[in-house]
Structures are given as structure tokens and as C-alpha cells.
Image: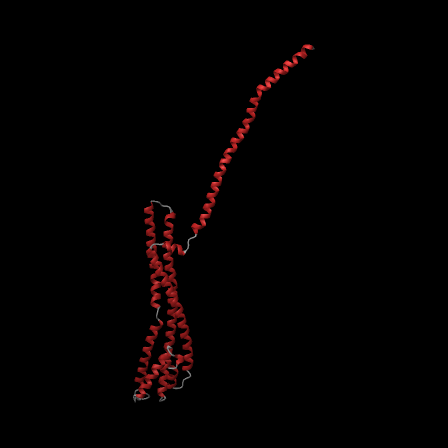
Length: 296
């Protein structure tokens, strides 16, 4: 018993020494997982700025996309070559003139038909050649083609009468013939007056597409030259030039289509008024012949 109790302190001393010797190793083992965790976390921290940079680049590219797509007529016109600019300017001027002619001709035909209707009502109420002349030369119907026709025809009859000719006898036919010649002269002037501006509309309608096509060909030619000079086939290099070139063709169609439509409308209006004037001439000559037969 005594020997056992004496040996206990020795065993305790040996155990303490073993613990002191194993403490550094245990500390190193405990630190190893911490270092590994730190090494795993480090790439994550390093990758975070890269992800931020990628997000920034994506946001900047997204923000730049609307700016790149913001292409309008003015920007394409300002970026076009001198020849294409001249073509587009010429087509724009022709289009504006065509619309001005449209407004003027519409107003002219509206006024012409209204005054003509009023004149025919007054003319059909006349009872003699003198009444027809008085109505035709009045300020109310001044400048109306039908009133001018009736005025020159009745003036011819009055001039023949003042010359002492037998207008209701042997000179009746010659008086009517001279009256018809005077009316024909007014009709010729009427045709010239009503057809004013139609030649311009016809020219714009027939040539504008080809003028625009010339601008397109020239612009696309410059785009291919840019490809050769830049040594690249990137579409972004040639797309602006091609868009500007195609805009010239678009302007040519914008100028041509309304001009053709206007030409057809006014040509029909002129034909309709021509038929109306022909009917009036027949009515006028019949009225003069009847008045001459009555001995007016």
C-alpha cells in the first residue's frame, strides 16, 4: 500500500510532461482547419470585385444600347455624304412644292365650281343676248371661264350688229361662226389655266424614285468603300451608311406617291370641268341661234 502511494506522484509527473510536449502539435492541428477555411474564403473575396466589374460592364452596355439605337431622320441626314444630302434635299423640296400645289389647286377648283354653278343659274334666267352679256361681264362672275365664253360670244354678236350686218338674215351663220371661234379661244386659255402645275406633278411622280435610287446607289457604294478601307466585315461599320442610303429611296417614294395621286385627281377634275364647259358651249350657241332667229 505504501509503495503504491509513493508511485502515484511519479506517474502524475510523467503525465504532465507528456501533455506539455503534445500541446504544440494540438495547437498546430487546430489552426490547420482555420487556415484552410481562410484559403477557401480568399478566392470568394477575390471573385467579388470581378463580379462587380462584370455587373458594371453589363449595366454600362445596357445603358449604351438605347443610346446606340437612338437614330432618327436628322442624325442620319447629318451623317450622310454631300451627294446623298443634296439628293434628299432636292426630294424634300419637290415634296413640299407638290403639297403647296395640292392646296392651291384644291382651293382653285372649289372656287371655280362654286362660281360656275352660280353663273349658270343666273345665265339661264336671261331673256336676251343683252341680258346674257350684262350678266357675264358683271363683277360677280369676273374671271369665270364660262362667263368669259358667254361674254366674248355676245360681244361678237353685238359688234356684228353695230357693223350693220344682218345678224338675223344672211349673215346669221357667219356671226355664229365668229362667236364659236371666240369661245374656242377662251376654251384654249381655260385648258392652259387649269393644267398649270400638272407637268411638275407628273415630273416629280416619274423621276423622284430614280433620283432617290441614285442617292441609294451612291451611299451603298461609299459603304463598300468603307469596308475595303477598314479591312473588316463588321456590320456596324457599314450599317449607318446603308441606312442613310436607303433613306434617300424612301424620300423618293414619299415625294413620288403623293405627286402621282395628285396628278390623277386634278387630271380627272380638269376632264370633268372640260365636259361641263363643252356642254355650256353647246347651250350658249343654241341660245344665240335662237335669239338671232327671233331677230334679237
